[in-house]
Amino acid sequence: MLCIGKVLKSNGTDGELLVSFLDVNPQDIDLQEPVFIEFDGLPVPFYFESFNQRGNNRALVRLTGVRSLKDADELAGSALYADYFEEEDEEDFTGWTVLDQDKKPVGKVTDLEDIPGNTCLWVRKADGTEVLLPFHEDLLLEADPEKQILILQIPEGILDL
Image 1 (cartoon, one colour):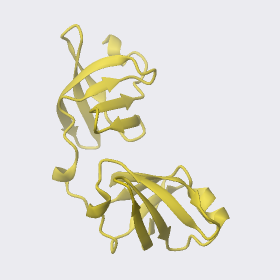
Image 2 (cartoon, rainbow, N blue to C red):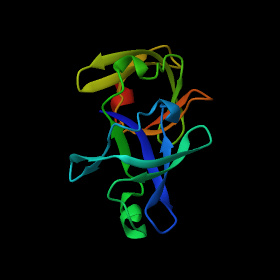
Image 3 (cartoon, one colour):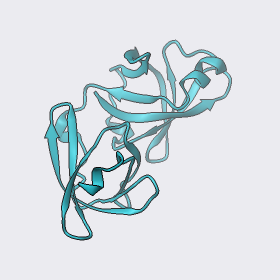
Image 4 (tube, rainbow, N blue to C red):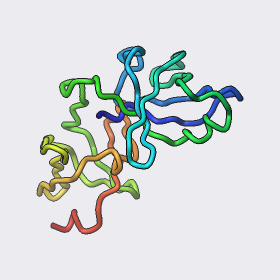
């Protein structure tokens, strides 16, 4: 499944949510298909009951079963996943600048290594050497498509290899 967004916060008292979408245009979301939120490591499906786009990458949404402020607050900070996007819809990060968790430059993405279950990015460092970095949603801290910047939580010692 592809991480398509994140629940930013509740909106109002009747379960509405403010959602920010990552690398997915909200207009491309199939409102008839479920989105998934993980609970105890398992994906739980939710369907859109309402969807009102706000700007380029946000929307106010209502999901099935979310009826109160308490329900909505429990989902704040949760990632949204979908399984109906095809691989070719994923972003090509070639040429993007990678920063570490302290926002220090690491290098530029030169290629994507699509190892099943372990997508990695080839990154050319300033000294010309290349390093293979794991690229997983748990390690992605921020992505700025306008500036073409990825901020990653880089495992300790991996840049020293």
